[in-house]
Image (tube, rainbow, N blue to C red; front, top):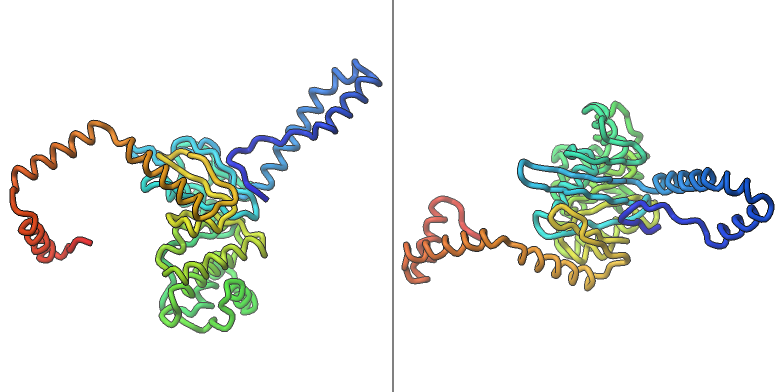
Length: 337
């Protein structure tokens, strides 16, 4: 199933519409005229209902303002059930804010969020917590595993917090889904980075969520381990029908998705179906170039003035200035990268 950026109801088949119209007109023109609006309305409602039921997550008119900053500015998106979507954009484009609002970790300023057909709008903190626990999985760049617990105990933790006592079989199956069969008794310190992220993913999947959100899930991994985790995520979609929405800066990671959605300044800036590393990288280069050109003249003037002032106030040779800066940074414990 290929998700779309909007939720426009599908049109009826031209052949079916033409046949129905001709038959009705031939038998009773007056009746056709009287009933066709109701029929069209019913068809449209049924189509819209079907489209909604196939969307794991729906965002409508989503905004999120932080004082004077519009992190999200009228976002409309559908994430189809059983699909893998990557979200990309330049730094500060609103990617993480989008993920947090969609996952119920942050409340939008306005707009509507639906997860698994349930609207998050107006839910109390308790009901929102229950929905996140039962219907939403979240994987972060950092693994967030408890070091004193085994892999099995970390995976079972969400169910125990919900008052359930998971069976050993249930936990073993969750770990087997992510390729960690036989690692149940290992603690995080005894696992590689990729294995720890797999445990984190198994923990997120133990509740059978409607959607799994990932915020840079491969950002802390080397290229080989990252590829293994991406292969596993792809398999979860293809084999189990899991819905995944992933924020990433990596075109290689994004190319494993069914679709890539691009954000710029809190707005949807297009998308790519069946992405490749080359097409994703090219689109990101274009967006980042445009974002750089959108710097205001006032900001450029301030930057130029500050640079001129600094140069006039410190006419040291480059080598001396560099050595002084390094010595100061070392003394204060803030060595630059």
